[in-house]
Length: 224
Image (cartoon, rainbow, N blue to C red; front, side, top):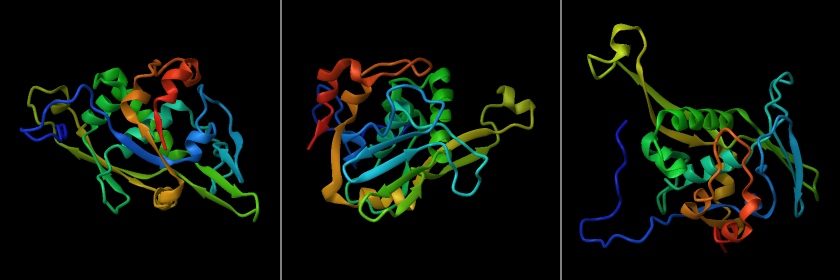
């Protein structure tokens, strides 16, 4: 898949850094919806008048118990939302996977690409249960409804895949779940994050990730 390329016109002056403001539900910033470390069990937190259960259940299969989401998934969903265009009114977000990796980890290398694919898979498998304290009514949703993947025959004849039945895989985009898309439509409950500042808080994908270790840096991420 080809990179999306720069959105700057030829006449624009290059900025010191590529700053993107990403709008997301303020609850994701006010409370630890995304854990600071990798999880093996579900988590439950309360933010204001809302109770969140993250992971540990599947609404249609009681035998499935995915772990709670963590900061890697926060980085992925915020990166995904950075591809939304102003005024765009659709659940579908199209992007180049190479550009996604660049925004997520400043790299499109094989190791990072494989790890990022697993994180995206988690976002389609893990559910969040949101319960309003006043009514006791709960709603269950995933962040990503589906991932648009296209397979094609190998483009290069000298590719190792050319001598096998395998095909090259291309990411065309993701479709947000209707519930999560609805949350993004509540303008008064959104908060903005500076993606480049958030992703500059470095932590290896395969080790413990703790975003609280640099509170001064983290505070720069949010804009009311």
